[in-house]
Amino acid sequence: MIGAPRVGTGPTARMSEAWVTRDIAVPALRLSRFSSLRAFEHPGYLPVWTGSLVSNIGTWMETVALGVYVTQVTGRAEWTGGVAALSYLPGLVLSPVGGALADRFDRRAYVAVGAVGQMVLAALITVLAFTHHLSVPLVAVAAFLNGCINMLTGPAYSVLLAELVPPEDLHSALSLNSAQFNLGRVVGPLLATLVLAIGGIEWALLINTLSFVGVLAALSRLRAPTNTSTFVLKGLWKSLWTDIARGVDVARKDAGISLVLASTLIVALFVAPFIGLVPVFAIRVFHQGASAASLLVTCQGLGAVVAAVGGGVLIDAFGRKRVLEGVTLALGPIAALYWLSPTLVLAAVSIFLLGAAYMTCLTGIHTVCQARAPRELRARMSSLYGMVLNAGYALGVWLQGALADRVGVRFITVSSAVFFLALMVTLKLLRPRSFDATEA
Image (cartoon, rainbow, N blue to C red; front, side):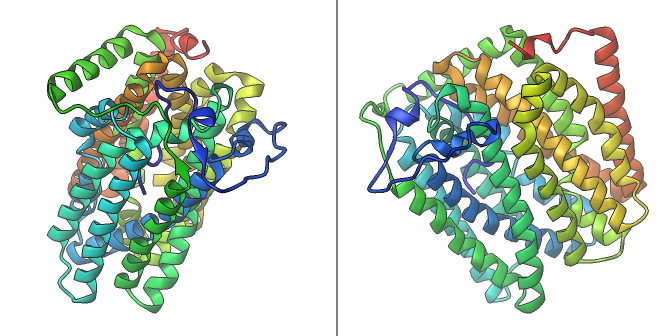
């Protein structure tokens, strides 16, 4: 799935004007009373959203299948966390580059090329599985290459999607994109459980390969704007690094953006690894297999979908500042409750709550990054957010997985949740008005 779950905007005129659907008519939906759903009213958004959902369902089928495969073959949480980290590690370098490139290409074609590249990688893994040549090192290489493509094209996808709506519906576009990402997290693992039980890992991988047709079909129904920038090779790298440096400087000087980027790093290091370690928790703590892992991933996705759809209502009622303060303080205790769950049922309930809190936090942070950035720098703000989130997650999931092999899964994960809570409480006590800039 290209670019999920990022959403951003870019320097061109908003895409409800600059990008149009080709030969389709999407009826306007009367959803204005429910602010989180308003993006569906704009032509072009729904086809891209639907195509991304189809692709994302396949991606989550592959994620569950390969996560279970690596855990069962190696028996080590360090390998499971390490392979998951390889998909995000390239973000440390490539995400800022992708952000700078997002304004240099026809973004529709750029994202389509990335989707084709990911389809080819998925097809190769599928062939290896069908011919019984699949191995953990090959899965790791594919995860790294897939991560490289995703980080280079993710900011362009973010700009493309968010600019299908006017600025006042940015939060709706971001929330609904998060909803489709997590709806894929719900449907994908359920289908993966069924396919793994009936046909095996190779069939889950085949379905993922075919799912990329969904996003490619949606992109084909968009027509590029007339003001697409011309790509110039001369002086490319010098110009790219100049663009990246400007984005970093703006983020550093803006109090709201710098705060939420720092918060993103802390969340990524200490809380987000719960995503990649689901197979480890299901297999090594509850001594169950793919069905338990799929149940936990599905419950997390359901929680995130609920939060994505209802997040706008919370912000309308309480304001972004209060919502962000509340959810960052709640993340630590909810994560600890999940990792301490004595039964699979309680773990499923806890990860539902954790998925909701986690998505509310990231959606709020993402919106702050986009709303406070100058229009011509929003793609770069999206790339910086992606860099911090992905690099922090890659380090956190690998480190927690490695330590879990040595001191126990519950001990290291609960300790991380408690440490995260301590950091948030300390920030609140020392800087009680630290989140004020997020409201503007």
